[in-house]
Image (tube, rainbow, N blue to C red):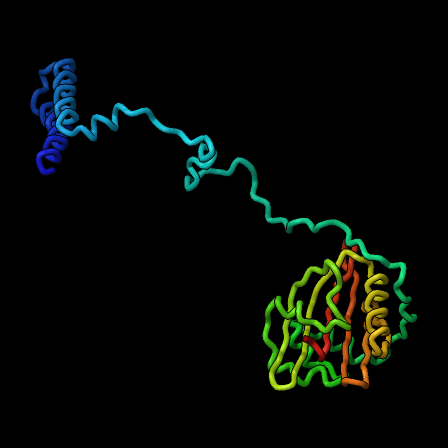
Length: 247
């Protein structure tokens, strides 16, 4: 191995030394000497000779990935857009009950709580209905809590969850979920009103500006829920849901 390294080194060093010391030699003589030394080095190492004589292999499936790490402009601008949804949600509205007309919320403490809350946890802490805020201190944040809502107040079909939290500390079954849907607000209201009314909950519908609030309780298990809904720009509805009897 040492001899091979020396031969390879000589192939590069000797032509440079001769060019520096023999200014009167012709270029043709130098080229001949270079070729002789390189041929000698390649002949001494069969692996080098074989590698030089082999054809270059090209993988067509990887050809488009060449220069993947090169610092050059992309072929087209990068997109920072949000992926498109799966289209308009299809929901059977034939059997939905109609939500009662809202009552103007003159002194709506729930509306104030919703407007001042930056997180679902803070929203839950501000709720007084059915002791919804009692377990807020032990909330844990995870999108998985959206799958643990009670069957009586479930997640809207095809909802896009943006934040979720829950607690199972002690006797707590608090669930708080923020999501949006491409469905109009009236359809969302009617869907949830039908769910809670058929499950024995009371339902009070209030409105404060553009925000609608649907909330109620159930005596049989001290269950409670409250939903805050606002229209989204471009269509659809944003929803904050708080309930105290999750699974």
